[in-house]
Length: 148
Image (cartoon, rainbow, N blue to C red; front, side):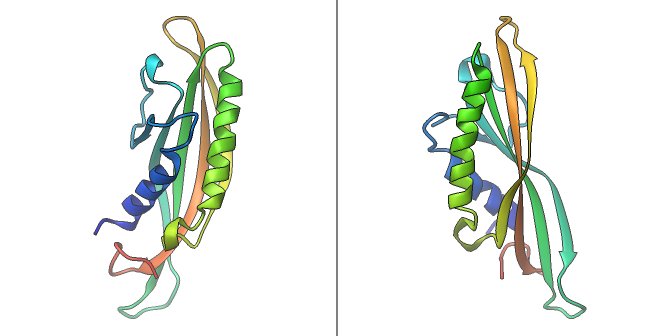
């Protein structure tokens, strides 16, 4: 079994990969831009996790984990901002509908959205919409592969 962080990252990917506007162009742990020919696209990664024990002492202490899951949407062209907003609609609906990820998470919520502007080498406009979700999970501190 994999670390709970990996299980959640893969569960988010499974929810987002079939979305119609980016179908087949969703990637795990790709923290660098994709080629211009591969947009619109989604990148899913976890760069930060905050953990705290939710009990005192003992060998069976529970650990609460708060994962910052980043979903990065990329688009290019004159109407890139409209494309990114359309993708955000798909992502937000899918993430809310699956917010417990089959029992892996206690809760998940969108906590921040940031639009970053850029331009590619062909001088077409491009942008990245970064959606950060906080996903909360609990499990035994002694075994980070399972949840309570």
